[in-house]
Image (tube, rainbow, N blue to C red; front, side, top):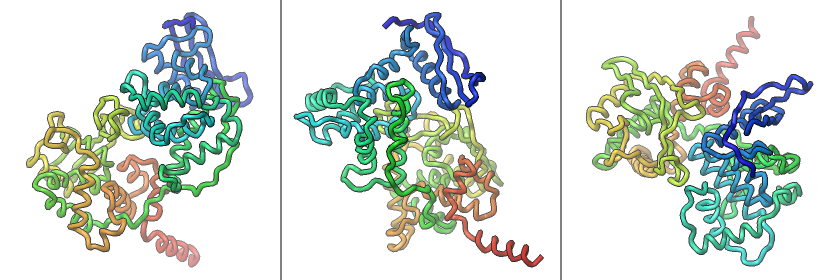
Length: 453
């Protein structure tokens, strides 16, 4: 490889010479200009972002092809396994911890399927561990493999099918079938299948961009699955009285843990915050007047993931708001009741050293499993046995669903409710369609009035 670190990039531009809209990415390596054309601006921008990220990481670029070392490795891959390892290496810097975990999970499902009948195949659990805990982790973050894992990786390298084998529909279908099943052989939820299929589809699109495949083979294989509409089950939504009963019940859960979490759960119900947003809430983000409405200015979140997927090496990364630029903030007006709860929380418990409102005894971020355990206990105190057995507020996240449902049913305009919740309007209306009460009667009255006029 004739390598150079002398790289220059230009912004994506519209290709005016073609009748069909196309977009051109241009860059220069060692004084030699390179370009690549894409059918959409999004694809072109993604490619340019990959190139820039590689340069930012200090990768050398090949003068002949114009590709950085990581892309060149993927382009030269002859097997699906080698390609998938290179793909993860390339995508890792672009992805949040939960996205990395999802990418690794999906590729670990399909890779054992895309192998030949080579003797000495390790058991499924060993193969999955070898992929999730070693192969699909960047080289500089991998632990030392045990002899068992090393043997499994050698088998994968030898048995993996050529990348071009995916142009045969039977192999692509086998991969999709693997994505549609859970580890116990039962059918995966439609949303789970859709999420994993999206990862596989993107990986194959990347192979097409590198010209290792002529077209995405998934486009030729149809696997019928029930479509997930993403709508919230209205049975999970608590009313205001039930929400307050749950908050009171939390004060009886342990000497400190339950009382310390009251304000966190109150933020989810009265403010519609996501759990990761509540976990990242700092004192400086809160405007809490002595009377009237307050304001939360959300800026940082603390999403939880496995330590091997986070940049910090801890269970929680610090990130910007979901689906937003790192510098974007979101204002959430909060009612006097929540203002009072937060003021009491600060007076009683103070903050962590970095200003966070909600913390463990050692100033850490409270884990999802810890507050889920307390939540389960609070439900048993606040609800009847029949309600405990029902889906009603089964998860802390259901408090957020209850908040948005309450806003919409109170007549808050959809754009305002979406802004407070951090949703797109179209997504919010689709997700909460079944939770909006009284709309049929209102529609009937309006139609009747129009007919009578």
